[in-house]
Image (tube, rainbow, N blue to C red; front, side, top):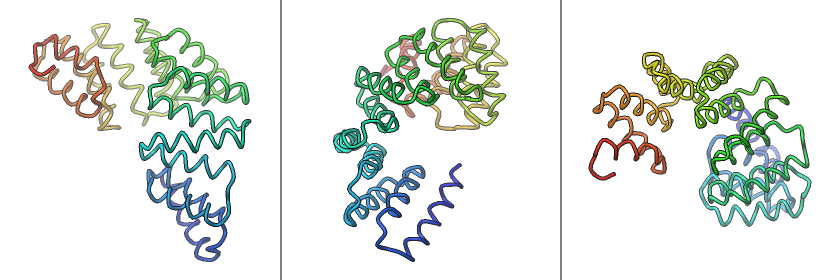
Length: 275
């Protein structure tokens, strides 16, 4: 996927060399740069586009995404609010603003924006997946599952929907169902790290430690910075009474994501100083 955006970026560079006064090209290049996590460069392109007179909803939308990528939340909110004002029926604006509210931990507004996106486009599996994730944030797992069910009805090939539903099922102790959802996600995309962690957690909670560790190892191989994989493997080691390995994994999880509270809870159980 990133190669696709690299190619697009190269195309936009060539187009801008030919026609450096066409504002739309800078905006298109900015969007590709956001996908490549080039936030500052994307912001520069948005500013150039505006200086050439392109003062439309899409400009504010893309600049709002660039600010979000750079963790400049107040500026992002101003731009996304302006994008919604100019294009009140663009569901994408609400989905991105919901992502901002998630980062700001304003879950009520996050959920409201996602419901508005679904009103605009009831066929958007992305909106239902994101709404499901929002309900996970407030620990309403059954409601999250309802939204993920709908996402899967719309798009039965959504590995993210199956993976996120596996997480929800683990959270309410439905481990066999979680394994089934994770299997579906892995069948759709064997290189997606998350469902291996969710399946591994379900295996660990049902005492199938060898299978659990194999899944956690695979998840970490695919995404070495996935904090939840280390946290879940650490819990498995704790259940296996391998405390040294558990501590190493749980501390690594916190290093990657300082807000991962469950890792701290297990470190406290083991009496590790500082937690």
